[in-house]
Image 1 (cartoon, rainbow, N blue to C red):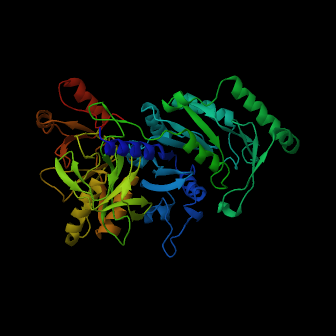
Image 2 (cartoon, rainbow, N blue to C red):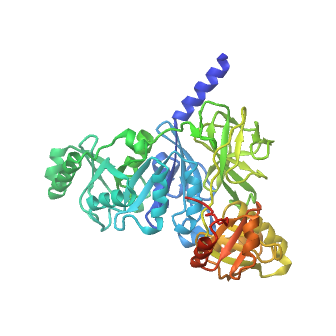
Image 3 (cartoon, helix red, strand yellow):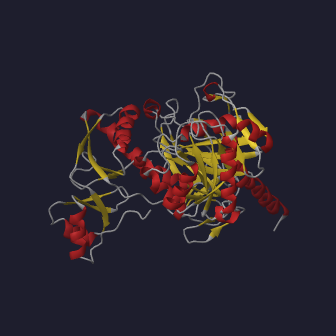
Length: 531
């Protein structure tokens, strides 16, 4: 090995060790987007919650950049935010909270090294997002837990610990523990030091919450029964061994837990410090062949998201690439693994919500936005040096279906272009048959709100209003030519095809599907994804 190569590998390893790449997942209204913005506040990326530092005259860089998100107050698309904190480079991927967009969240989870699970103290784990938490658990992903909204009335925190362990199989190991009941939140005991950290509110939570370190003796005098109850609960946690254990955390068996209020900034610093101190840096990743690909190999990465029209002033298409190994340099020519063709990276950006800046270098864990990357699809691998392929990102099984038609036939060209773009982004799946083609395709989605996003974006970004009508179908299965031929002769079943040529059988009821499967066990009727 030459000196230059060795030095290059050392640089990659050093830079990777400074990276923390994680996603925030939660139920809608649990406070995920608020927490995201408060991370930016504490890192110095914003001076005041919502306003971007040193970007005078430009609109605020928020994680909810889409007009529909801002109108409805919910996240419907994932986004990437990169900022510096304590000498580290943090890549934070904000995700949609609503179950209808769980497929987008699943793709993001493929691109991160850890996750922060945000729970509303009053509600705990909600059925709508239990599936996402279970996905983290099944993938053995390191998860940090944040009990949010402790400044409001809520449930007993010990009860919430039991719920997390019972429903997810993830054992919480509290790092901070609340002093005061939900709604009367005084501060936290830092179990690492045994000291009390008292919080002070700021106006609208716009600036960092002042913190006062108080020794236990003084805390007992000043906080009285609230301190004594918290201290007893900490003793109980010690007795049952609910302590931070790095090996079980990194293997996805235990979850370091923090308590706070994102709205008032209470506990936000503790959580952000926890991400730096205990969340893993990028490591070797599994390839499609189940081999580990080291981070000091030449550049490699994979596309986990495609997004168009993030900024009306750009109107372009951005492919989000997670760097898995090596040193990315803007302008380098890499190989597009699926096509075997060379790919230029001249137009590469770092992404901060809807804002972007030219990026010249990136390292494992970073997210690079490749502008107008025509031909790149979700799940594609890019590499320099020896060929490598990372696992494909599977689709979720659709649960709702709708027929789409343009209201104005003179705008059919715009309708077709928007249909193709939103399908590439994974907003939903588009199924066609040989007769209707793009005139009346069937849209397949996980949840009905995906149809709302589709219609809104088609009108506002592509200038084509759309009419959506219900279908009788409730379930889809992947099939092959022989089985499709048999199914075409059966009423209540429709054979359609996706853009990549995969055939799907649509059924009006799950019971009809099950009966046909029982009667014809040799037929090909496969689940679309095993999540």
